[in-house]
Amino acid sequence: MPELPEVETTVRGLARYLDGARIARVAVNRPDLRRPFPVDLAQALTGATVTGLGRRAKYGLIHTDRARTMVFHLGMSGRWRIEPDVLEKHDHLVLETQAGHVLALNDARRFGSVDLVDTAALDAWGPFAALGPEPLGDAFTPEHLTGAFAGRLAPVKPLLLDQRIVAGLGNIYVCEALHRAGIRPDKPAGTIAAKAVARLVPAIRAVLAESIKAGGSTIRDYAQPNGELGYFAAAWRVYGREGEACACGGTVSRTVQGGRSTFACARCQK
DNA sequence: CCCTCGCCCTGCTGGC
DNA sequence: TGCCAGCAGGGCGAGG
Image 1 (cartoon, rainbow, N blue to C red):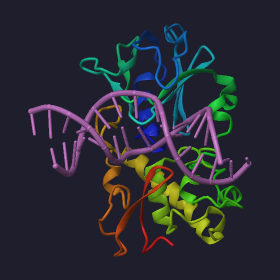
Image 2: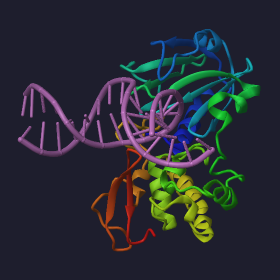
Image 3: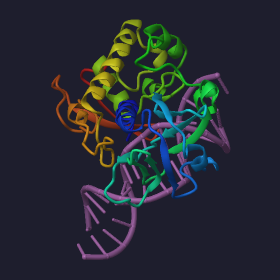
Image 4: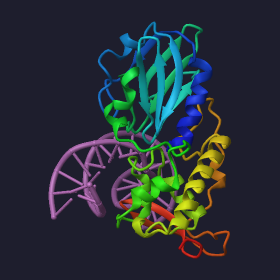
């Protein structure tokens, strides 16, 4: 399930094949994912030159010399397959560069999306307009989080999944960051002490940075573009470890918040 | 505005 | 071996 580190890893992998490349051929193998593909997707990309790649929250950005950016979201099962030997089921969009590299966007569960957005107006694009700060950027500070939490009675964990508060966190890294910061996931956000919020910000940054360095996490159907598996999953301290021992001597528990699994240790998260 | 809940979709896993 | 329930979960809309 691609969260920020997996998207970052994907974008970096794609850049090796796409940055500066001319897109020679485009195959659109179905009309939609979560929402319809742009009707002119193939036409807009064919013959275009990629001027750069980037990421915003969990979205990947492929900028072109036609003042438009292809914005993709990997949803839960999306991945780019690089130089596939054969095309597979769910290779919904296939790009071929003039140099002959083939890149296929594969998404079995189809929770992902592909859009074309005017590059100059990216920040105002609907899904981007209300996004909170990048967790690895300068605007993500304890003061920002304290302001976002003020007066909120909702548990902190679902608030950290709210992309308007901070953009790019998903279930895995929220669980891991709260554990590192020693904060229980069901703590009402507005009641968290300033000192704990001050621990949470660097905890979020650290867990993301470490995962990016490791090439992302891997669960089931996620793989890096080059086909290798990210190995950050081995570094999870609570996620997916229900019943296992926490480093503090406690036991990792699994609960459900907002319909999603939460992993935590009641002994060291207060 | 705040908060919770359910839906979208497919494939894998575990229980019987 | 087959069948089926449960689970994974980001984003978004509905409803209280």
